[in-house]
Length: 156
Image (cartoon, helix red, strand yellow):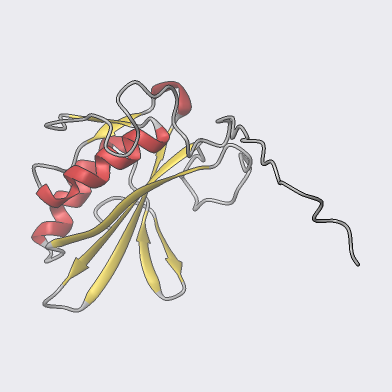
């Protein structure tokens, strides 16, 4: 479909464009009637480098996942785009789907994926001076020690 590999996920069509094909594929799907971007998020596959992908798709550490909806045809389609860790960037969909502005900012904030040509790619959930991206699999979770008062282990 539109020159990209296809797969099926529980009855839903999944399109696997490369980063170079991404913007063109979304534009073509918009012309096909997929007028609403329902969701845009990402996944960090750091711990699953050998996961299965369709023929012709090279698995990368990150994957941007976009769900589009055709209201008139009552159909959904999902796009899964591989994004390498050493060039963690992809085009913004803002010009085609302005509603992705906040979703792309959240992915940037949580995963560190840069959306080129985004109108305001700044943190949206974490403070501006926060270091790192909390949803990356190599992000240190840290811990806050919990102190209890009294002896909760004693039974009478």
